[in-house]
Image (cartoon, rainbow, N blue to C red):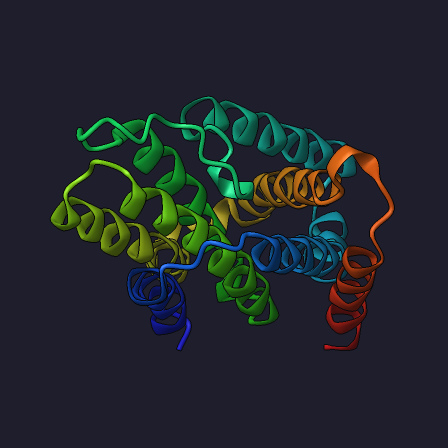
Length: 223
């Protein structure tokens, strides 16, 4: 299930958009806010204690910060697709390689902590679904041919399972396990906090978003 569920989450999200052609983004924004809170809470509850327990605190902090910087760098190419924004020209028919590569690196790294922390699988799944929906809306609404869009989605769906497989099978991962997890924590911190900050447009109070954010944190704590 570690390998199958991330693939299904992305592919089924694409199929939903292809069939239903949703136009109301408000529900997706609520799901995105929930996913950001859930992922952030799981990162704090599950990943943080382990990395600080098993390594020098300053080194861990350094790689957490490097993870944040890595994600900021990736977003130069993805234009923020990891947290629900796709600011690319929909009139172009060329394959969006920068978007694909940056999202693939992000998704590959997401797969690493799943091997030792099965609860992170749920956080990543809930994070992937709204992102895959928003990405699918962009791909299907652009001038990109449907075959290229399907190719993009299928390859993208394989990246997280690939990261989990490498974490499980590669010998070198054991040596650098704490460092890699610290890097991934930085990626998760940046993504989840950006989602939460952007979930309130104009920084206005929104009761529904406050409820789903609180719910995401509470469910992560109870798992």
